[in-house]
Image (cartoon, rainbow, N blue to C red; front, top):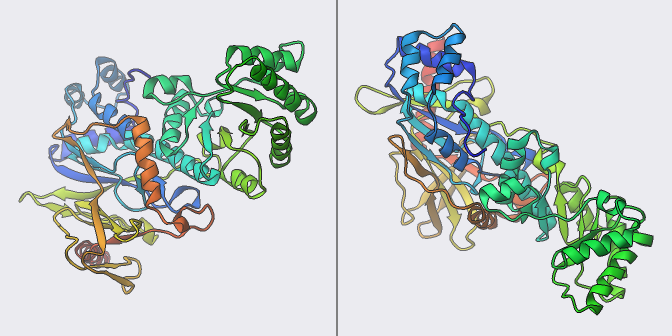
Length: 486
């Protein structure tokens, strides 16, 4: 993972289209593509943007080496002059993006690519692959952390992930979404995130008895002594033996700085409450009770409602795979082509499904906050040429039902441009924050959401509105397309 040549991590049709542009069009014709998604994952009220750092690295290293050219030549579908062009290929365009850790919503551009058409076409697959995966896992993690209501969530799904990359970059995304750490040591090394873990049942089983196994572990790791208590019998053996070890540590003057038990099977609500009473009665009220065992946000929410005495959660399979919603659904669509006069000509994709009709033109996003509460009011997608001021009244309307309108009075709201300039003329002009800094930023972002938007079931959707000028442009294009089809 130190360095991978991802240039050919693309769909074949991106390359065949590139050759078509090379032969039949002005290869330097500048276009705009938008990467966006249409529906929040897990039927939620928001998503979390993640993966931008890997997109940046991909763009920086995007070049066809001799082995790539030889392989493409062997396919027998690419001509020599086109392959010669690829041998000197470098990305030369501009990219704008929503920063990692930002709360985002359907239909707004996550990434905007402004580049010669061949370049913009080539980067589609990799951008979607990277952003779709990491945004999905970051969003799932945020939901799991919300359900835990402030308890620590540790990601440890590596062995169930769909391969090394998914396990490692997924763990990175999970930390961005709110996890306090991961069991994935490679992720810790690459991205500077905390790594955490205890021991397996095999550790217990390899010793003559449970007490001896616990004692040996405590001797080695007295400052991080979390003992797995369900190998044989949780309440009759595991917890009593853990209490025995903790008592001996205290008697020996060993500080009990971070210690406790882990439950990995059985009725977690019942067992945790019984274990809590046993630990408290033995004089260990600050002992941690952690739990694992096929957890997700719904089960954690249910266990919290049942009064489970669990304060730390290990979430694996259902998080790293986003098991109930395994794909994000981001798409990449042409939005504009630069005309001979230098101005962008907006383009629109039609569909019988209204939600698949694209928003045309060169666009940007303003995030609007309620000034009094600091909570997110709406997002406004407008044309790049438009400018707004907090000192003026602002009228918002639902683009699906434009008669529904809201007037925000001057001084009552805060505007924030959402997208950052990432690449300028092929050169990166943006510095990615460290993962733990992105995580902290993400927590701030989530605080701007109303509780009604964060709830797990039937959340209130945040309004993503269009400016009047963008809306009019869209309607005019729809009318023209309708006339052409008559």
